[in-house]
Image (cartoon, rainbow, N blue to C red; front, side):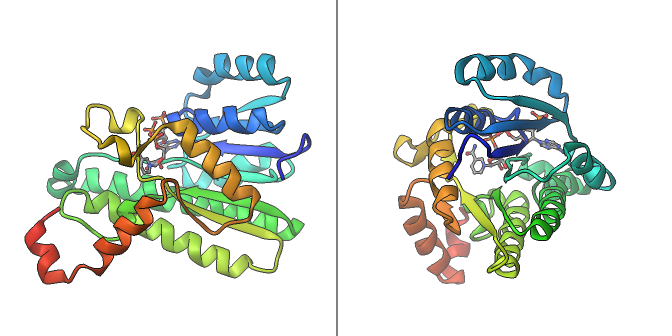
Amino acid sequence: MTGKSSTVLIVGAASDIGRALAREYAKAGASLILAARRVERLAPDAEDLKLRHGTTVRLAECDLLDLAGHERFLDTLGEPPDIALCVVGLLGQQQAAEADAAAADLIMRSNYNAPALLLNAVAARMERRGSGHIVGISSVAGDRGRASNYVYGSAKAGFTAFLSGLRNRLAGKGVAVLTVKPGFVDTRMTEGMALPPLLTAKPIEVAQAVRRAQERGRDVLYVRPIWRVIMLVIRLLPEGLFKRMRI
Ligand SMILES: NC(=O)c1ccc[n+]([C@@H]2O[C@H](COP(=O)([O-])OP(=O)(O)OC[C@H]3O[C@@H](n4cnc5c(N)ncnc54)[C@H](OP(=O)(O)O)[C@@H]3O)[C@@H](O)[C@H]2O)c1
């Protein structure tokens, strides 16, 4: 359970989902460490959370693409957090990524290398302590590569597989790993897209579902359960048919 003494690290805290997670965990009485690039942007949010929920909120500067800086960043936090959530991601543009290796590389590193390696470093510290919760925000896009977003999807697939392996390795060692596949979420990332309301969650819905799943020690969360069925069907489609659909 998230008690008054739980410390929750949110990396990518300036994202819409990160902000909703901060509100959700602050409401539950946790102490927060909000990490982001240009973290000073979050000062008003931090003040608001402190006033509303009487919780402590610390801000920490963190660019996850600076892989060599991960250990240093974690050192500055002191004791490993009880719960570490990584929300960092980059949708990017599929067509640009097809034409430009640098654009593809940025999407791949932002969704796979950077979050996976940060959580790996967090996991080592939690493993030494013998307790902790790790939460990675991946995507249903990683369940099968599709023509419309396979660069992003393949990086999320890597992240999903990484979290699965990490969970497997840490089973029985006091450290739980939750993989989150939100489905469509109404955020800055999806601004301007025509998303079907029945399949689209609000950030606060994601945050509530994540906290529930994390507290219950679940392994994989599809925020709206219908996505589990949709992705099962998509995964089962024969390759020949899937090619003709070009989704
Ligand atoms: N929205 C959806 O439909 C949807 C669906 C499935 C999964 N997701 C995943 O949910 C997560 C949150 O996305 P969102 O929808 O809330 O969109 P968002 O607001 O664009 O969040 C992405 C966040 O990642 C941060 N970030 C990117 N690269 C970073 C880096 N190198 N170092 C530190 N932070 C970095 C961004 O920081 P800046 O603020 O500095 O740019 C931003 O805050 C992402 O992992 C996304 O892939 C979203």
